[in-house]
Amino acid sequence: MAPVRFTVGRGVLYAYWEKPIPSLVEWSFLIFVATIPLEGLNLPFFASQGISLPKLFGFLFFISYMAHSGLPLKLSLPPIPTALWWFLVYWLTFVAAGLLAGDTAITGIRAYVTRVLSVAQQVVLFWFAADLLRDGKLARKTMIIFLAICALVGFGALLGLPGFAPDDSNARISAFE
Image (cartoon, rainbow, N blue to C red; front, side, top):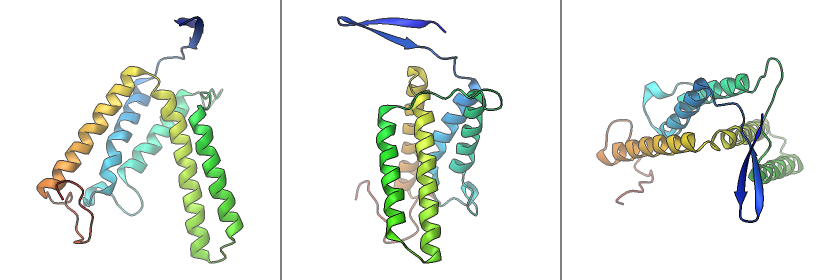
């Protein structure tokens, strides 16, 4: 793969273009991003016992990205971005704080392990998403889709549509008081 040369001021910046993003990876990522705002809805067909659409499409995105990276034969993952190193420092601090706290209750240990694994998944998601969002067209599509779904959820809550409006009277409503 040949480097692409960019001139920035007096210096020269080299960027190495990877292979193009396959359609399956792109669409699985876009569908995953589109389902994230739907996680908090009270619609019965969007979630069941422990399985939700964001979890399902997040898993499909992970599988498609790993297949794109060459998992079965030769794994070729992108470099870790600088911001991700800070996220990893947070995760390691969280792990160390939990280990030093010494909670012996079984429910406390389960909650701790669940949270540690959840943050680890977020680290991997951040890593893969940072690689994909370097493509300007995909970043633009992602922003538009996320904006449209958030607006849909917001308008559904404002209009009081079933499943969109909060069930609890103590729930926080943030638009128009």
